[in-house]
Length: 407
Ligand code: ASP
Image 1 (tube, helix red, strand yellow):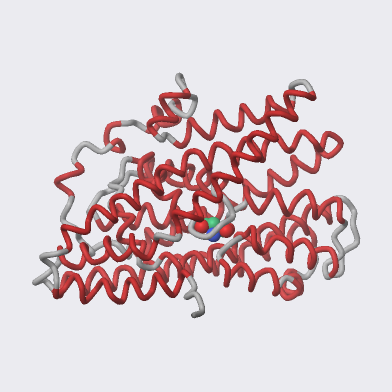
Image 2: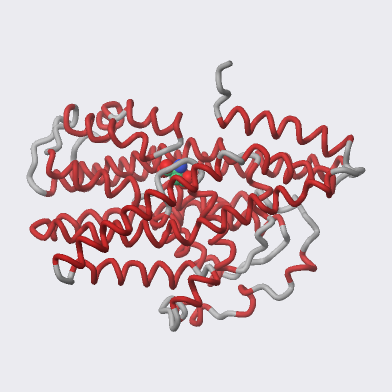
């Protein structure tokens, strides 16, 4: 028998969980633990994957001593475009407000949110860890990211032997954590079934409320798509044009194979071989620049993921009836950018990161259950934007280095 693709399994699980929640609602509490384990497993892998992916990425820049300028330009473009993406997401979700009205009536349980306890200034100060082990164990993303970048950078400044050992160690660890993530992700259908059937059962007897949740999710998905289309279809092409005066739409056409691969596999990593090939063969980017910018981008540069993180965190806050101050929203943008940088280029990495973004701002983790149902749809579009962003960086960097491109 042919194996059913994961996204179909997830869709089937959702389709089954709805009648199960309606007709067998007395059984749903007894399977709730399955969803809890699934979410705990997502949280479990988040910090190790962020830490190893960042240390690996930053320490590998050391090998390109003569390319210090390239590294600066590439990282500058990556961080700049990722921040714009997160900002667009947060802007649209505030305008459309898809979560308002999906009232999950859980606001009583979240009275002592971290968000309400910490001032904006404190949040910024806390980015510098005073005890990295405490932050690792508590899953505090920002200090962990700060430390990982710092650590990765100083690996590049140490002896050849230390550099080699440590970068190999973190590369290997990252490979293992990616495999662990892919393994956990295989259980999504079961996790989704347990979580969604419980959400449905909780609304038992109130079909109107259920309807509201479903329509909110539809609207939320549309916000993610709209944000990604605006960013990928307007902002990034405009940036390419303004930096290079080359034709960005011809470039999109040249990239159709990697972009379609990203869309269908939901993995920047899977699209990488095609991105490398087409950028060199079609766009005419040199091997030196393509092989530096694109692999780095496939793990570090995730515009679509940053947008998704921002939209999702605020959507969940809206659904729980939590008012976020401007300061808290700013922290969400910052965290989304960092979470995207720390995400791996594999399916659902962005979902793993949501667990971390929510805990940074102190939002209820159960909110993940809500967005799981439309996870696949969001992953397809955000991965496409992630990959497109990498190829744009390659064009901009190659052009700035004086390369002649076929655009
Ligand atoms: N699937 C995305 C990628 O590979 C990461 C994510 O889940 O956001 O780029």
